[in-house]
Length: 187
Length: 150
Image (cartoon, rainbow over all chains, first blue to last red; front, side):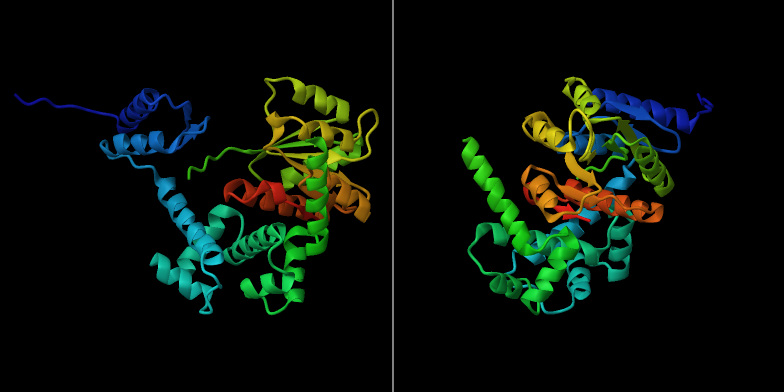
């Protein structure tokens, strides 16, 4: 016996999505054009379970591949700024494209498209973030910090610090000290 | 990491109606995925926030000089309450004295904005502030040492 069927792919898809999201108790709203609005925070496990179960139906979550790549770019930058004792002396574009196996142009484009900032700017933010941490720890002088983070001079570090935070490193330090004093008074 | 296309929730408390309108207009023109809620003074804002069911903003812009409850009063109350710890607070003031800037940062503010007096500058300032705030929100940067003065 042969049956002839007619089906509506879009309706089928929506039903599958609805069923799987409900099964995993993810609060959501199906939008048009292949978009789903998730209203709550979703745990990593639930998310990967959702991905797996949708994959069986030939449905994949598109955005995730890009956000994964962005996360890898961020991780590589953070590793570069934090874990190496000194920043690499080769160019950053070379370092990133080698590490991630994509051309730098591709990496840079996708990064700025999704993060509201450029790779160059993100690296500066991360370097200043590390500088803040080192200043708060009080173990190194500003001269040592600027050497560690590959700045040509304290003046260069200070001016980039000011550009990112609007404050000078010494004003930053003063605010941190005063906050600590306040906390100690309360305790 | 999961990114949602949630609009950025922005609150503004300012007793000057013109300033509130400029602010809302600037954000509309920036075409950001955002929702702005305005409050006419500090008391109005705190009454709203103190309701345990209230939806909290990602970022709150606070005018310093307001009647009844000043921005600084609001800042202190908000920072004393753990429920509000994830809110970034941007002080929005006509003053640019280093003393005011330092005091509000010590009091728990993250951002200090000297109110710009022209509309295109205002747009740029809001854009810069929302962008840097997004970096702290999305990249695991330390909020305890998040200061941005513009």
